[in-house]
Image (cartoon, rainbow, N blue to C red; front, side, top):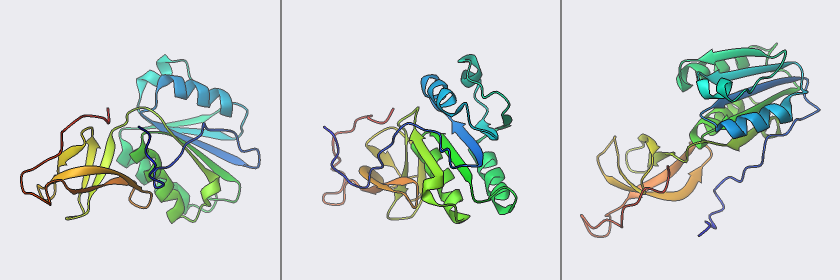
Length: 197
């Protein structure tokens, strides 16, 4: 059954923004098929930079942006820090900068938050979810983030409560909301499944 929750983002495939004067493609954990599709769609844009968390499958799939500068990072945190630093530079964060992001929901929305922090307009940042369905879950009780959640009920790594993973997505937090699963009757949990693989 499809969710009718309006907080869930709707994604479209990345498409070139011809009004851009500088382009940055950022990816991590996307499927090889989506990487190929994005590289073909964005191939004519120049100047183009490609930033990615080290992912050998992208190169194995034959994805390449000719004449693109490429930077690789050991993990998400290193890429996020580099993007934050780059967007502080007025020669980088200019009118005309376009950012195309491909990857998991937590990854793409983390990039969007950094861009918004540096006052980039929402329309300057395109997001496409690809790869894993794992969720970042925010505990509404202790405010901890729980990463790479695949089940509908998860033990919070902050407070230890059993959290039911709601389908409500917070764009500000780049996370789904987790609420105490047995708030009504202690120890009574819903049927546990693993829908977010």
